[in-house]
Length: 94
Image (cartoon, rainbow, N blue to C red; front, side, top):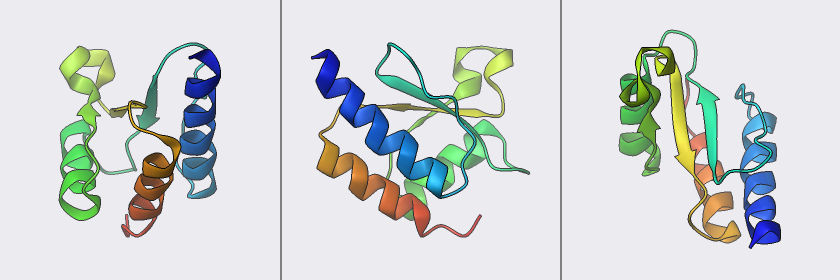
């Protein structure tokens, strides 16, 4: 399972990094925290990801005040779906 989540993490993190997203690659979790694009709250970024890319994420402020400005993504689907999500996110003009 560790290897499976590592591959999913790498597909997601490397793809988003190529798109210019700011993130720290996690060592041992199936969640990835992303900094919301400049000018966006956590909720606004999550809304755009859902509405324009059909990608479900969670606003960071749902985890407390220090989470504001971040988006949390879960790596709970396979690599092909994660790569598809990255492609859809890449089509949003932030």
